[in-house]
Image (tube, rainbow, N blue to C red):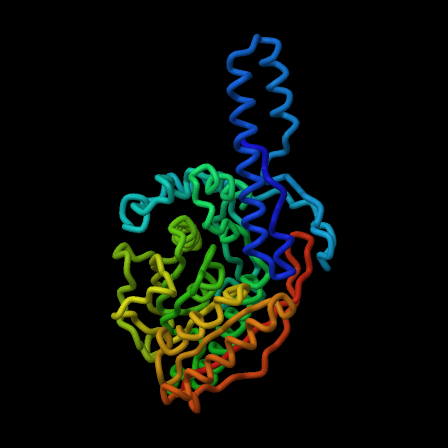
Length: 391
């Protein structure tokens, strides 16, 4: 096994994610060469040198238990030792009928599928109580045991432009998922108070809506939306392995997964769906720099950590009219408040400029951003939640 590279994730707080990725990839590539050279020499050595080689491997900490010191200047300080993960998800992944039934699982990264990685299941409380069981809703998320293992895989395959950090559960995704669950709870109260009136269904943020989890990563926000009453959730990401995790998580949470490989409900559902109807999940590879001409629209678009590089503001802003249903389509967006504030300001500026140019700018209603605190695996982070509606 390759020695796990030092976690580059801590450097992201400074907004240097791309540079960190390149440094980490170079460091991991060097380690790959060292490990291969060591392996080659040990294979031709005597039994005594074999014993020494075995000892050196045992001294290397496995990816899921490696804890590196934080990058200097990281306001969160050194990360706490990760708790023991919940049982490995290998049985879930390898036994899933999705591998045979869903076309996305025919897509590989360098010939590999997500079940080729060590997988674990995280359980994330969503902060709301299920009205039937009367216990807190918990989302089960299938993920690689370590993004370091994903980084090593990319380096071995020569895919140095790939981003391994989809494999981590980031604070923004947890905050967004809990924001979705809270919005769905407000929907439920309103629907009960109005006995499910048409106006309450139309005004709902989540219940009965068709949702898109944009740049989904592990898909926690989309899973939360489906669990809390969204009619359909489509996960969009450029990495097939991330989308395979999303669908395995949907299956693990008891949600129905489409086998079409493309969302089945037509765009612009208008929120008229029955909140008790089937909660369908699907996933598609998506490049926001090459949006198809027949791109469907959604009632609800979820996005987090999509503005960490300056070049992302323009393409993401262009997706607001492209992905959002007119007449009440909504965006819920989560972003760390201090990591890249200029990118966020540029994004909002472009949303309004594009709206004025295209004639819908006066119909964009933005609520006051709110700050949420997320504590996960010993780290406490602040996240900014933004909500805007295209009237």
